Each structure stands twice: as structure tokens, then as C-alpha cells.
Image (cartoon, rainbow, N blue to C red; front, side, top):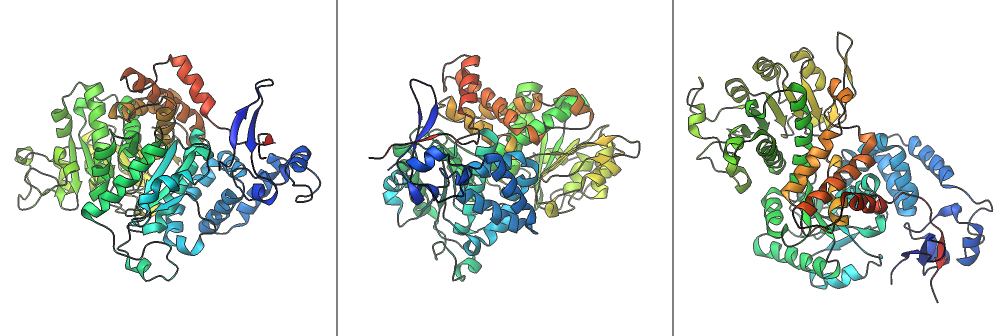
Length: 573
């Protein structure tokens, strides 16, 4: 049975929820619970009289009360547990509170605190959310999806728990990631929480700590591999297509050996994308597009070094190639030669053993033939920055302090305004701190980071803003735009459209302060702008709704749920 339906009164145009439950069953549903804000009429109609204090409360009062509770917690993990408990009681209050205190609560509901939560999820979980798919139940996937009781599902975020943030294999304890990701979709883009579904595909774990933990919630077996693994994924996708044929499926925190494969296998079969690869790339490209506008350098003059060339690094590289081809007039091959990918063994070069997603970025051997370095091993990052005369340096390595003083000094000598993106998070993994970049470049550097940093005041009194290169800029609007436009698939062009839309929101005043991205506090407007750009691109490519710009904008605004209390009408018999 559906838990409720959203309806419109044909006479009054009033939006209301048609609800089939009464009494404690209604109060126990976090999507429907209003707490003491149920009106007197609703209390009488839904058998709630006496279950709450006599005076009818307001949403604003509930926000104040729950924020006070939040502030009493002394640790980030305690704050996470408190917010998750609120989500499990009353989703309207939760989302309204997060929106009201976004900058403060974003690091709690998602990175970095969600990582701490996933490390101990089996011990702190209070209420199960979403669905857990395993080899034992996947053949019943259609029944599982139909049993969730939601009016409709337009968004699923799925993980197999193998690469949770920088923490590795956390198995079923990785469920905190899709739960947190969906919270951001709702808060940032207004996708209605009743149309979302977090999913963990539990195929086992190779984490001995979890396998030996008597409270571990997941399958106690080694991870499936090979055909057995892909058969579970295939059966899951088949079920999603049958039950929710128009839903968007986001792949989240899959291991590098599976992430690119799944993206390539399913991106044309089902509306889907991988935020770790494509969202990271589009966000970084937006920051760099703004930076290049500030420096005034031609894209053909940029030489970009990327430290850490896993799936996120390759995603950034491919997004930059799209930017250089579209706006720099380069060919694919030429654009790729402007990117120097450095991994654990140094610069990736022709002849090296490489994963499929790295192959296009192997530098030819003759590229370093004139470098005055030892040819006994691949050049390290210091060699690359110095001899390739890198102008933009990007870190996705998770190595604290990887951008040393020597590397920064070389970078500052290569161009007037070097660009640094230290994207590893949390702060303890950041390749370089903003203060060090500003000191090495005499305040001339432009910078964005993966973790939040406060503005820096330079010796001359100027304030420099350090933008946080957060995927929140991209994935909520991408999801909203793809869903509303009824896109058949998510394409690279749609991500490039998102990149341009975000960069274009950075005003000249913000650019003068070194800001590379719009303020995160404006995330709803950012998500709307991205969604509209994505929907328009889908239309232009013939894979989305053929509607005017005005109509698409109207539909997107109408789809952005604002957390407030709607009136209820009983629909039971």
C-alpha cells in the first residue's frame, strides 16, 4: 500500500496529502509526521487527539527546538546521530533545518562526518532506511521495490560499499553514504524525499574487522567477484527498469575496478551517472573555467598536473578535455597532451601498465626526452611541475602535504597566477593548505579545496576567498534536470552544460576576491540553474523534453519541494 499520495483539489487548487493511515501509524512515518504541528482538524480526523500537547505548534518552533538540541552535542558524530534521529522522526523538520543552517550542517550530514558514521554504522544505527539488495534476495528485486510503499520513485542512489570515501571497503555499513547523498539531493535541489530511495547492494566484504564484528549488519562472506558480481548488478538494474522505468540511478562509491565498467555498461541502458567520476570532474572544471577567466590565459597555454589518477582524477581530466575542446578549439588528442597525470609510481607514460580509464592520458616518451632528469624511473611530481612548466596543479591523492614548498615555488615561477585545486578531504588529507599556497605565490595564486576553509587576509589587507570544490554544486541539479526533462540518458554534454552554468554564476565581484565557485549558501539557485542548463542540453540533443526554456524553467521550479507542512485528508476506508 502506498503511504500517501500528493493530490490537488480540483475546486480550490489546494495541494494536500491523501493519507490512508491514522493514529500511531501516521505519527511513526517520518515522511508524514508533523509532531505537535498537526492541526486540531487533523487531530480529530486521524485519531490523534490527546497524543500531543493541547496547543498546536509551528514548524518554526520545531526548528528552534531541534537546533537547540543539535547545539548541545559536543562531537560531530553526536551531531550526526542527532540529525539522523530527527530524519527518522520528521523529515520536514530535518530538511528545513538543514537548509536553514546549510554551511554548518553540510559537513555533518555528509563529508567528513558521514565517514566517521559509516565506520561505526552497525553500532549506531537506530532505524533502517532504504533497501538492502543481496545475492540472496536480488531475484525478488521487483517485489522489494514494490513493497517500499512510496507514491513513486524518481531517484535511487546505490552503493556496494567497496570504496566509501577514503575509508575503503565498509560493506553494508556504507549505507550511510546513499542516505546522506539523498539528503543533499532533497536539501539542495528540492527533489521530494518520498520519491527517493537509498540502496546498498551487499555483495559481502573483504574487511576482516567487519567480518569479525558480532554486530556487523551485512553479509559475512568475502566480496563477490567476476561474473557473480555483475549478475547481481544486472538483476538489480533489470528490476529498477521494470518497476521505476523513468527513475535516475546514481552509482556511488564503487571500487575502481567496477565504477567505470558499470558507468560504461549502463549509461545508455538506464538514466544513470557516477558522481565520483562525472560530478567531481564537472565541479572541478567549473572552478577551473572561472580561474582561467580570471587569469586571462589561453586554454592552449595551460599545462595541468593531476596528482592521484584514480576514477576521480580521470573524471576531472575528461571534464577538462571537454572544456578545452569546446572553448579552446583543441582536438581530443591535443587536449589530453596538456594534462600530466601523476600516480603512485610517477608520471603515467606510454608503455606503463594502466587501467582502461587511464590509457588516454599516458604521456608519450618523447614528451620528457629533453628533461634533465634521470630516465631510470618515471618523473615524480616535482619533476613534472618543474620541467612541464605546470600552470594548474590538482590534487586527488589523499596525501597530506603532497604539494611541498619546493613544488609550490616551481609552480609560482611557471606563470603569473598559478591555480591550485587541493581536492582531497577531509582536511587531514589535503595536499596543501591555503596559507601555504598564498605564501608561495605572494597572494597571486587561485585556489579551491575539497574541504571548507575560511577566507585568508593577505599582508596587503586583501581578502582571498577559498572556494570549496564540492560535488553538491553539480549532482543535485543534474539529477533534477535529468528527471524533470525526462531525459533518456545522462551525457557528457549535459555535464559540460552544468560546468558552464556554475562558472557563469560567479560574478565579477566574487572573481575579484579569488572566488572560483558561487556561494554554497545559494545552493538552491545553483541547483535550479544547473537543472535548467541540463534540461536544455538534453532537449538540444534530442534526448529530453521538447519544451521551451520558459516551460522547462516552470517545470523545474514546480518540482523543487519546499519543506513545509501540507494539509492531510484521510483516504482510507
